[in-house]
Length: 242
Image (cartoon, rainbow, N blue to C red; front, side, top):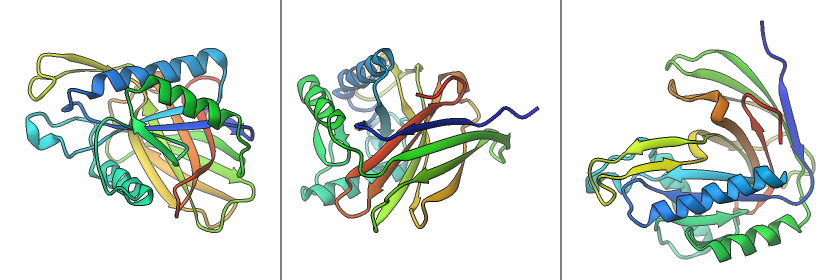
């Protein structure tokens, strides 16, 4: 029996919080604690704040290959560096709504940026509908995501991520050797495509070890030029939408 699709939408203020991090970086665990607090507070208060932890791969050669790292996430951070005009990559870096960046462990900056984002209008309302599908070729689950937008910018992309909470890793080498790291909202699957129409469908395959009870789909519309995020929404894979 097929479960009914799960739907969610956001048309008011929102905060899309991306953090670039690595298990090989000793200054990243405190920032990941901030990301956990942001996500937990948003759930408690019912606020449209959506957190994503992108694990980059340029720390992997320094003793510990991050199991969640992906070269595509490093490329995403590089695109932000070009947009910000810095050309600089560092971890932990937090980016709010694609336009404000700072060191990810800075709770005060994070709180201020999120508060400002929540009071701003949403230029491009976004709605998602998520339907599980059959098993994927890689052993995970294929998830179909239908999206609908209003007034999308001319040069825009729609990004869709599957994130997972409550992950634990025993780090054996590198700067965090001997530590057990608990991480939330880790990006486990991600895609980005041009927004050619107000409606469309995206299909993602989850990793085989993903627990859907601790996972969510996050969708967001972003200007391809200045990287401003103009619409966002999230849906838990196995619970009510938020």
